[in-house]
Image (cartoon, rainbow, N blue to C red; front, top):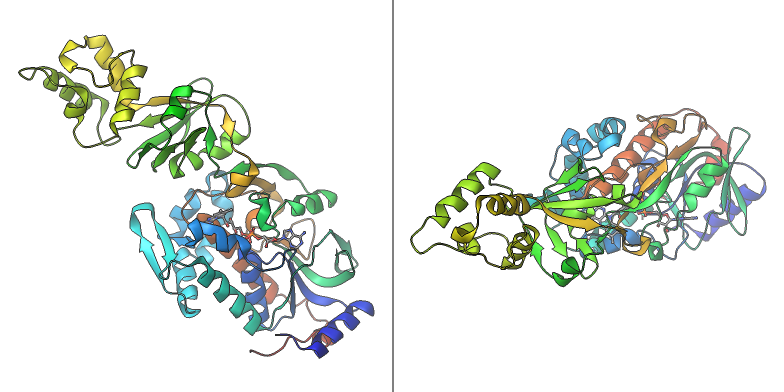
Length: 445
Ligand SMILES: Cc1cc2nc3c(=O)[nH]c(=O)nc-3n(C[C@H](O)[C@H](O)[C@H](O)COP(=O)(O)OP(=O)(O)OC[C@H]3O[C@@H](n4cnc5c(N)ncnc54)[C@H](O)[C@@H]3O)c2cc1C
């Protein structure tokens, strides 16, 4: 912990106008990571956090288990960021998911895999262990963390930057913005960073809630609330019926629409408005032709055969009934031998793409991440320095990137933070030795 003497020196330093080396804004996943990496390289780092504690979103993550990264390799993980793939690739290659796991092992947090959905959790299943490890590492490296300190504005000043809080203005040589997005505002993330970026004349892609449940206006969808399907592929169709995205992940029906990773992973585009439909493949491992054949074969069995029996183990009966209704069949569990060819074809179409009309997404309060943020073209993808604003770095969710559920968003936060730390740490411009002494960080505790 910083000594009182050191605090006094730091305040003095701010008052007499000598610059601190590095200020990091936001003590979330990215902020804790970048601050610790820089302090470990001998840099003096002041970490400012608006709320009363660090890493609140980490504590809430993964249902308080914290899915801290993925089992995927760097390139496969990058692909899941869609248009941001190329931008993120160098950072993910430099700090791949396996290296994040190694780092947490070194910090005393062993991890375990959940291979089915490519997730990695702390072996303890406790998000607090992840947060505490990052916080401990930052403190022992010498980072000075100041909570309850809301940054109101950031401005270029001379060769460096000035950060304004309600009580003071603090100058620094390099400024790293890690204030996150606007999702889950109760965790302290209220989109403050977007205003700072816009004030600096930097383009911000309009932020919208992402990884958020979908709304549907259809009463039959609400009536299925509580029904889930584990093995399905959800396709997002635009107003013309074209598939614009797809995700093979579980889906849950709710009293307002669809949730679960399969639906939430497709939510960013829906949040930008327009008319959308989700098509759910209830039997993703069966080709249309094979399914058609097996229904014909089942219809020909002596005494006939009903739909549920013909399908065997698979989707919940209530979803099969929904598919039958969508095919224009009144019965929940129709006798197949009573269906004519055209209705059988329509039934197969509904089983392979149950149409769920989508009217929008739930609010920021329910969104795990933000899509949108600082336009990536403004940022050097190797260093995360803002091209037109030397000495300013933006990492984590404040950037215009959002990955699907599965540890990808923490991974992006850690990798972007690491890239910025490597660049700043190797940079020779932080040479204000007197301010470094005045703001000397305490030794390991
Ligand atoms: C419920 C929930 C569950 C999630 N689960 C997972 C998961 O299991 N796996 C995964 O990969 N991702 C998960 N995410 C997403 C993940 O938490 C974020 O993508 C990640 O935390 C982003 O890291 P960050 O450091 O950029 O921002 P954050 O972690 O959001 O940190 C930003 C920090 O900046 C602070 N701040 C904001 N404004 C100011 C200001 N004006 N002055 C000073 N400080 C400020 C905030 O208080 C906050 O501490 C989840 C998100 C939520 C909401």
